[in-house]
Image 1: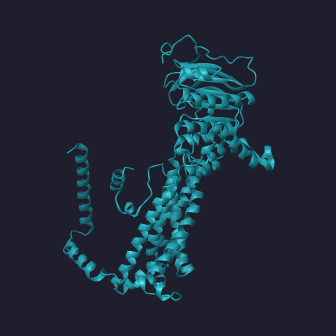
Image 2 (image 1 turned 90 degrees about the vertical axis):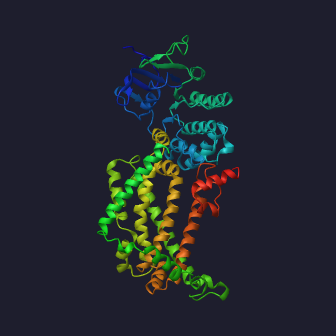
Image 3 (image 1 turned 60 degrees about the horizontal axis):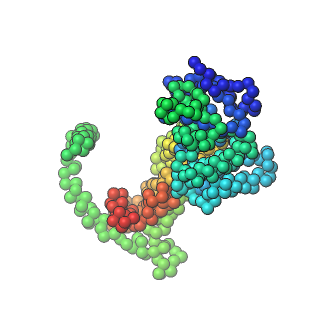
Amino acid sequence: MSINESASDDAKDPIVIAKNLTIGYEEPLASNLNLVVKSGEIISIVGPSGVGKTTFLRTIAGMVSPLSGTIECNVKRRGGLGYIPQRLGLVRHTSVYHNVDLGARVGVSFGEFGLSWWSERNKRVLSCVEAMGISEKIREPVRRLSGGQQRRVATARTLAQRPKLILADEFLSELDDDNISAVLDAVKAYIESSGAAMILVEHDINRAKQVSDRMLVIDDGRLNPFIEKLTIQEVKF
Amino acid sequence: MNRGLNRLLLGILFLLILCYIVFDDLVQGDWGKIDGAWGRFSDFVSEDLLPPEWGMLTDAYYDGCTEDQAMFCSKAFVGMLETIKMAFVATILGFSIAILISPLAARNLVPIWVAVPARIIMAMTRSLPSIVWALLLIPPFGLGPLPGVLAMTFYTIGFLGKFQYEEMEGVRNDPLEAARVMGLSRSEIAFNVVIPESSNSLLSQLMFMFEYNVRHGTVLGLVGAGGIGFHLMFYMELGLYHHAMTFLIVIFLVVMMIDLLSMGVRSFVNEEGDVKRPSWLMTLLPPNAMFSNQNQDGK
């Protein structure tokens, strides 16, 4: 059984360390997964449908227990982990402000900001909403926004949280090229400035290339480094 | 005729036969009282109930109104207003308490050892109908609206609470998961994710409960717990059904108005385009007719 993405010894400031992980629900979907994610990295996980990309992400997020192996996430419990699920996880009947504020709520603590805690939270919401270009929709219920706008709300919510690790499941789908650049620029700027990391599940290989520093493919039940020269068909998509 | 419809009709036929067997056992084969019942009922409606005695709604009974405002001091108006007030207070009180307890009963929010006691508390308040609560509360609190309000409040907590936690358990999983991963606490998830996410149904249930309490408020009046039911009982006991009919019409109109109000309130939180601005017609027509009506308007 191959070691896929080695847990290298020279990893500085690792945020995620997964060792010999077997993921799945009752039956294993993929096994012997090893991964080290360092500060400032953006990693894409690609692979055909049903191989366990989302399950891998959910396992890192702590929503699914690994069937075997260990996973270590060096982030604080409250606010340290940002998650954008495939269906975005927005509260649809409330406003954009409310949704982004959920992120700011866990990102801004009274202990850190004292009495200016409330205004800092408000400032953070407004700046993230503005960075995502949805300021004019701030009072709109999320359910009235287009799919692309909703993705920007989910991204703004995660940025307002200022997490150390962002887990995103196909969060760029439904966005046109201009919007992808705008969203990516904001996310990359945050990662560069904060030293956070991002693990992104992406179905579209070209988009994953555009986004990430490293690409890994879950193929044949294992996590392999993505080989540039292979086409989609050659990696059995 | 398609197979689905055949099965449905067969199922209904089976259930009707079952009902016949059970009911025949209930009346021990004596169906004599059903003979001529329809004739007696139509006689009762045409002779005893109609026409309504409008004086109950137009003539001042209580002091304090001028002649042109007599309706506002009539027995039907004042009684109905009292019932609406009782139902309003009981619904809001019951809703407020239930919305605090129901997140503790939702299995997707709390562990089972918290959910079970919360459910038991709500089941206890729900196990007695509000009329039985009223009968239990009249001796300590005396006749009047107070035991009525308390009775309806208790029942509302149990009844609405069950609806609420079931609704909360049915919310989409992805906002819950995102909130948990973010690190929001259980109470933050309950009040900032789950309750807003199920707000449409919670509002609908609240309005249903208000309507239910208005209707039940009339029944509570029958046992002396105040409101329009008190007058209804009084005239029915005297056999003055023309008078009672006026109260029944007023109750029907008020229930219909609450239904309209409910549609209006829910339209604020519904999916865009699902609910158009409500009209009187929409409260009377069945949903299919309503939608075909909208389509004809090109909406």
